[in-house]
Length: 505
Image 1 (cartoon, helix red, strand yellow):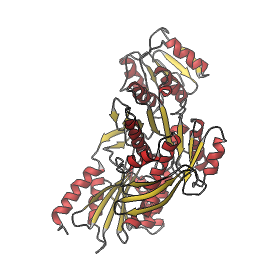
Image 2 (cartoon, rainbow, N blue to C red):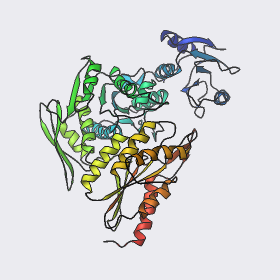
Image 3 (cartoon, rainbow, N blue to C red):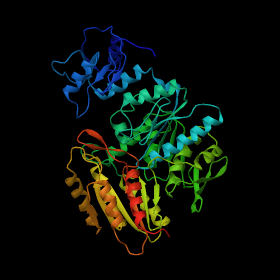
Image 4 (cartoon, rainbow, N blue to C red):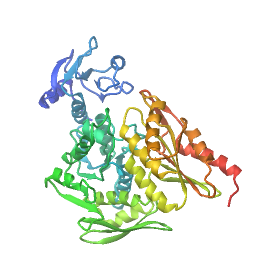
């Protein structure tokens, strides 16, 4: 690891047109970290003061732990050495990239964005890249996605879909130091809008699809803001993959503007990499991938017909990187993704709980479509909780979808943050009711699932969709994350209770 002095960071910020002023007692001090989290402060680090929830007391903690100075977009009176910048988020990425010696130069990087499917396709892609690495006697692939972060040194569960810039640069540095040659990153619209991937140039970028999501006062002002944020992924890459089936494929290609190679994929005959013949058989989901050079029969055994599309996204990126279709085939046959389409059937065959991370209207539409085909005639019960303070459009979108397509919806809690659960529930309930949907409000998630088990639909089989958290084992109240039992833990407990009182068929 090469360390630099504060004076080097000053020059970097000045060269980047970000430096406004500074007051430092010792510009020759060696910087040994860049952090925005007062709980993680190496001695002589640069502490970045940013965010709506930032408190001056965090800065006091940072200095107590030995921070060299703070970086902010305004002077925080009475608090130590400082560097003032015009854009603290842009500065954060610039500083972290420099501190970690620009590790992206040592990695082949893959970025995936889209409204739905990006987590599953990221995990599928990682599996393909791991198979290819194993075939060539090389270390596996590093990844940062909604459910997992593995950087070659440590594994952790993420808080945000895409971490803040200092963390991404750290994960890349750890991956390079561990001799991983590839890094997969799931990129959210928020990460693109607020500069978390600023300064990064990905070797391959994929835009899976686009629908209405993350619209609200604290996120994107409208759909155009959301779409335009997503499209900036193409300002951060050397090769692109575009879903030619998507209604906004033209906007994607227009954004790329022939600046670099593009692979189009989809079910259309216009696609360079084409998927056909998707069908559900007893052993899984079958489909064919055809390129100008060859065709290959594919099988995925993970439930959900829509996962054929998620596999397609991953195959397109692998194909762009020159990985053979046969490697994709072998890798995907037993692919599984943490927290996605986990199936828990009862012993009597009358109840199945499906745990999935579906969290927007587009994902729910796709999920209902798949379950209606796979479980014809079954009663569908949806359990979902809406975030506080963000994604307000989801209350309308998911509410309308579940109200129209579920036999019953149970509104429960997920990460209420600073917003009262009762207000969130009332907002969602009005949209369920607007399309004639039946619903109940049950705040505790375990109580919500117990309520679902108690619903009676006569002789019809009951499919309970326990959605929105996957395997997360925390909840956010206020600005703090608290430990909370995961949906699989809740499901296993209540399914055991059910099985003890119902005769196995």
